[in-house]
Length: 254
Ligand code: FES
Image 1 (spheres, protein in one colour):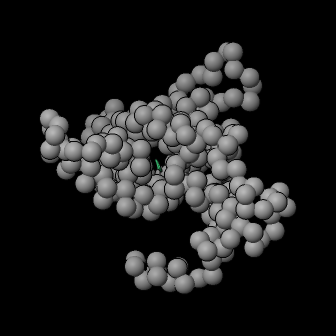
Image 2 (cartoon, helix red, strand yellow):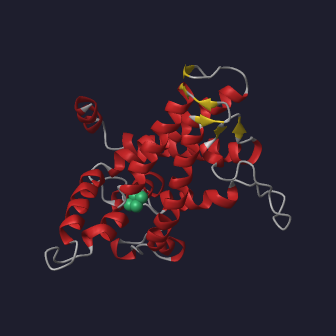
């Protein structure tokens, strides 16, 4: 793994932003098609894009283009869009602002910027990035529900079973949880906001928790990508089962 990372770092600087543009664009297109046109439940499985909303009716007051998953998906979407890591990634990839470390934005063609003092930071629409911690709070509910749906794949109406699909659902929720709880906002909340652990009741437990979250947080960018790909793979597996292209192989039970 480390040799792959080393080889990746040796590539020209523009490979990373261009790859991010490609991956995020494809993910955006795929998820849009799924939530607008596709179904979300097949036997005991719920697509991760339809979590909680798979059996919901769209409310009568909603415009025709609104589908049930959209009522909830703004939470994980907002959580990722305001994530400190993804912000760095998409500012570089989509806005080239700057395109990479050591690549001054002024070296590139950015006609909207007169000079360096023209940098406006996160204003206008991007000021919403500051509500990241609230998206984190809401995401905890989504993560809890995804855990529930993963357990539903093993404790079914026909009894206990473990299938390839259940394993995929569990791997997905483990990766989504690792991404969610390696969040910088959670790290701050759990102990980063304290000046003195020994001065507070339960301070030692919080220090240990903070150290654990810090270890998870060190790999936050990796969790961000692993969980994005696992969401995609889980949903593709779901669609293939639904279309009858593959049969879910039962390892235990069934
Ligand atoms: Fe990335 Fe919070 S910083 S999810």
